[in-house]
Length: 120
Image 1 (tube, rainbow, N blue to C red):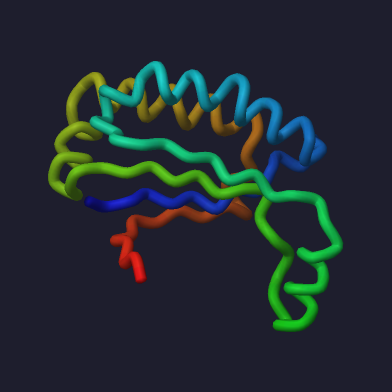
Image 2: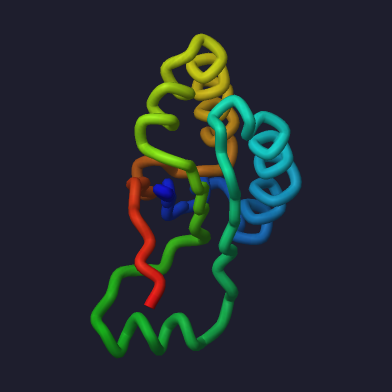
């Protein structure tokens, strides 16, 4: 199994609440409805909580500002994901997801990468 991880920063014209509402109630269902095209096994959204703990953690470690959320999507293999994304349906869905993401994400401040989990 591999996992796609996206650390998300909201669009600059949105509050965190607006960002999380759109992500959870519009983008999430859109992705879930089409997840079979990418052969996604599991999709999780982690929404950042507004709490002084975040400031304390960041300050104590000299870290950058927290992300507004993290998306995690599991796939059987890198090869299967590449194959699904390369299909005509995958190309069409990828473009539609990118267009929808532009409504709530600041791509220039967000990041994404593929990982392998090690449960300890």
